[in-house]
Image (cartoon, rainbow over all chains, first blue to last red; front, side):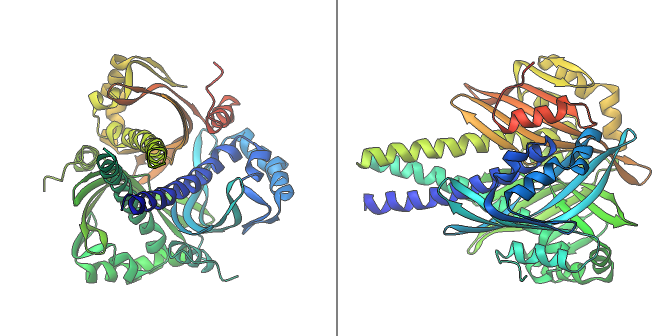
Length: 163
Length: 163
Length: 163
């Protein structure tokens, strides 16, 4: 009886910790990318993880690091920008997880701010030896292209993308 | 002694799970509504739940489904839009709960994005047989009308609205 | 054995509760400040806590209350505004914690909304007799000044600011 209750508590607590770990990982992306921390951004992904953005397809940590160090991205930082990653909806299934959220890229422009991109974010994550990491993150701008709402729908249902 | 500690752990864990369930429900609204998932949006509410927006008063799931399927809402999706529901502040009291957050409706417009609405959100929720559902969600645009800040204040205090 | 498992569960649960308490405090700031709740805003800080904004340096609760009651802030409320505090990344270390997030100040302007400020937020918090409170919150606008990305980087690493 005590044994059963202890085991049940451990399982439920582990579930909450997994969700916390994933939410924390996702909440670290914006601060890291907006401060140009290329190594730490890349380390959120598995070594051969994918960051599939409509503008560019990044395969593996080296390409993710290179994106952060690119003159384009450094220009956003120098001008002022905020990658705001919205509250996540997370579905954990054993050692795999799917998460979904919106993100806003807000950039400084002549003393004001404009929202340059509003994006659907679909995350696939996997538990590794050192904790959760991103397997594939798929971002599509919400500009009316049908694949972006579809990403949101599959993400919130805890499903993988169809690609 | 062991019994007391187990019972205390179970109660505290249940509290965290309730808050997680409510946060997860709230985080699902944006992805579902931006992908036009009318059935799933409506199912966040109790069958006769209310979604009271300044622009329209929706009573029951059928009216909520109809809003998602309306040509107006479908037009937003076709043009590109993001309903970003901010981090929630949640107060659980037994089988009832009050939550509060901001939301931003960001819409695509000629290659840029504009914030069409910034809104105070007050949520009342109830635990049902299948989990937490929305009883009444009250949204008021933050355009200077006094009821919007009042919604934020009552929500963050865990109080119901006065209406 | 049972004793060890109970103690481990209590420690892990306490960690999640600490993070929940801090996230809840942070999520209360926006609703409170946008509804002009000066006393409750100030009570988020320790009595001599600091709110260090690029525009103004507020030392202690009396100055924080005065900011909320100022004609400038009351003007924002009357015109319509949303202080959207983004999802937090929290690092707890015993009775101290560091958190980081973005915030957006969205203001109503002639029937539309503009993002007036996008800001890096670095929070230091301490556990007191009545729970967690803010020791120092440091906000710097993301307009290209180097200290703002640096705040994000130190915050996400769980480090204190260098000043």
